[in-house]
Every structure is written in C-alpha cells, then in structure tokens.
Image (cartoon, rainbow, N blue to C red; front, side, top):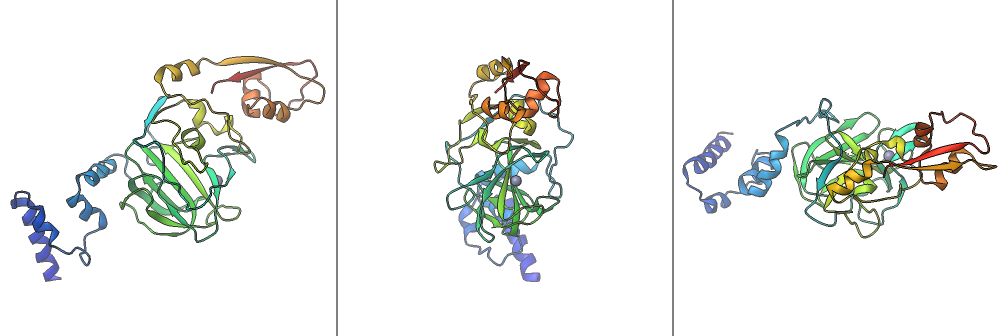
Length: 303
Ligand SMILES: [Zn+2]
C-alpha cells in the first residue's frame, strides 16, 4: 500500500512540476494501479478529457433520468460527426417492435431481436452514465454522448462496464438478455435527449447500412410523442435537416377523410399512416367512439 501511495504521489508530482513530460508518464505501467479507468485515460488524452466534460452537469449514476426538472423547447437540433453509427449487435438487426403506442402504453424505444448472451456494444463514443437495474428495463446501461444524446441498452443479462467508464463506439457494454419486464430476449434501445425519448428510427436507419439520417437533424415534438406513433410499423419519415424545414413542418397539414362502408378507426389509421391517437385528438373523439358512414374526419399531419 505504501508503495502505491508513493507511486501516486510520484505521478501527481510529475503532473504538477514536470512541465509536460508525457514520456515520463508512459513509462509507468498502470495495469495494477488502483486508479479507475476514467482517471487514467483523462491523464493521457485530451479527447477523453472532452468526453469527461459530459459528466459535469446532470450527472447522476443512480437515476434513469437525471433531467427531470429540465424543460426542453422543441424543435431541437441534434448534430453528428459521422454519417454512420456502430450497430449495437454484431449481426443483422431485426426490429420486432417500433417506438410508439403499444398495448395501451407508451413504448419509448425499439426492440431488436437477440439471443441471451449476445454482445451489446455502444453505438457512439461516450461515458457510461448508468449501469444498474432499472425497474421495467431490467439490467440497463446508459451512455451519454458528446452531442447531448443518451443511448439506453435495456434487458441485459450481464454488465461489462460500470458508471463513469469512457467508452469508444463498438466497445462492449454488456450481454443481451430478458431482464426486467421483457417478453423474451431482446435489446430495448432508447435514444434520449435530456430525458426525452426520440423515435430512434427518425435519427437512424436500422437496416444493414447503419446510416444516420442526417448530420444535422431537427427533432420536432412529434418525434418525441409515442402516442403519435404505432409500435407495429415505422412512421413515414420526412427528415428535417434545416431549421427552415423544421419550422415549416410545424404548420400542420390537414386532410378531410370521409368515412366509407366497412371503415374502422384502425383501418383509417393504417391506410393514412396516422396513429389512432392523433385521429382521435384532431376530431375530439375517443377510440371507442363509433364512426358513421359519410362522417368527415380531419386527418392532421405534422411530420
Ligand atoms: Zn422495448
């Protein structure tokens, strides 16, 4: 122990008085050292020091959402450095459930099929903000990224990281499973911006290309409201990559639909790519309200 203490003191002295002598630092073997991984990297890379800036505000390694009292004004712009992300699993991604309304509840992420024990990796560089059990989500890892997004990897069977670890894209976070409230093993992937979940498919293409929809993307309120989407299908996309487009999209487009024989709310909803909830909202009806032939329904598009 005495040896370690003197070694730490030696290292600190080099940093304090050594006037930037990185070669001296490199001679030290950190492998058996009682520093956490984060501290070691911080001293050797400015890039990682930048990542650690992410831990300065609303950094809570015990809460799923540390932004509870933060108010966000939409639309918000999200920026990416790259045009692709690293896929969270190493094989073909099969989305078994989308972001949206599901069995009368909000499903705030997408479900990607996997087998228990499959590796789950981070889709971007970042810092692990949370690696803990979260009610419903089971064993969960949350990574915060430089652009302000947090990615949530839920229903894991095992962790491979701990809070405050610096993570590179593609780095192992844990192993897939079915912990928490899961029907079978899968990855529940959530994309949060300051505690608000964004429809992941608006930001990312989950096909083999692993594309980010735009390096500058504007997220309007519609993309953070599960009630306006259905977990059964991908919502039709119009990517807003300029502020002008984002503002223009806020002006709602209205269409009148006349109810025909045999129509149901769910039929009208799927034919027109609009959720039942949004049809109900714009017509001041409930989903149980009967609709009549010849009735005019207002379909309101805001995407
Ligand atoms: Zn899910």
